[in-house]
Length: 527
Ligand code: NCD
Image (cartoon, rainbow, N blue to C red):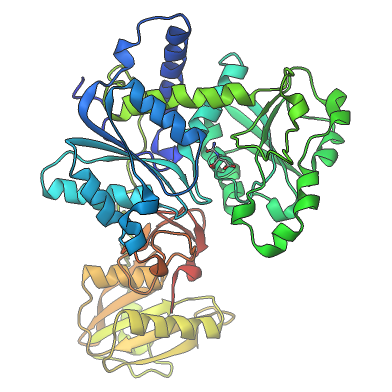
């Protein structure tokens, strides 16, 4: 086992936890394994063979294929396989996930947890919390593999899907034109495609779903940011009339268990829009294959059973690929495979780049000149200027009160909304004679609460230092923020004690580090 193995100990919470090169490595190794297996070759070098490695299957939501393929993969490896019985565990006594996993972690020298949960962002949170615990007690940190978390992601399904697409294309990864059909709203296997399809040089995605089941906007944006060409239709019938049809159709079932009553009532009509019909057979391009993560609805399947014995059937082979890709994934994170990897790993997390810029102090910076409109100039103290500049007076007032509350500025001060230099724009201003200095932590808070503002430190009636604060790349450690996804592990009602944490994405959006939900900047705040 190589000590330089870059896969060992890695958690797979989302597709992007493996770089594109690493995903390609996984597909290459799976291809080798499958070939060797088919020819009855020697599989020893794929096998982990470590009786001290505990593999825990923790499926808190139903599963057949993912659970059984992982169970078989773990058996292939000769490791200690454990199946956690959630229905009779202390979850019933309201125990938290961290407490439960911490206990199981204690039972083996090395551990891999394969988790399926309704709650979203679980693997990332456990990676951090149990990882910290492991470091504290001097143990090897455990691995968490996301086997599907709510509506969020299903990375290992994604890896088997992409492997299957590549196999269908004779390993040509230059381009893919794929149709995603069915419940694109709830289907996590579809959400994971926003990153997983990146393994192809160029991507065209046809989204086929009625409005109620359409792909959530955030995944669509991610596909756009990844450079995918996206086209949309409300039903298969409309799609078939469009002319340029894909030969790779990826169906998903209607996830009734995740739907509200209103959508469920329209089930038949929605199902009809995404169910294939016999009389459409001759409209399909040459060499078309249908795929499906399965299960299919036994009574009303979107891929009807008369297609099972036809060349359109790509889904049975796809499902078997789940076993091979998962054997390789376990071998990689256990450090058995990977020493021959030669490529680029994931980008390191963005560093806390500076969001505080010094502003040059000009002669005009005499306090009397600058802060005289309606606010008493301070001889010594701090003036926070340009608060929410360009916003409406109502929003600026709101921001001023938010700054006061979050920075706990219960001191002498005056504040107000004024015209900025441009008479068409407003800005907020706060003058704080009792605050002679603002430390780095407070400045960071202020940048998060009111990006774009300036901070003037005043001594003896002149501005001694001036900083402009921009939007920080991450926002966390505030009591006043929360992820607005009730299924997120950070949701206060989940009582999992995972504090919210956002990182900045395009524009002024902030994405939850755990469940991936994108928020507009203003929506992360509770005040
Ligand atoms: C999928 C899942 O659980 O997300 N199934 C699977 O893992 N094979 C899709 C589904 O449940 O419809």
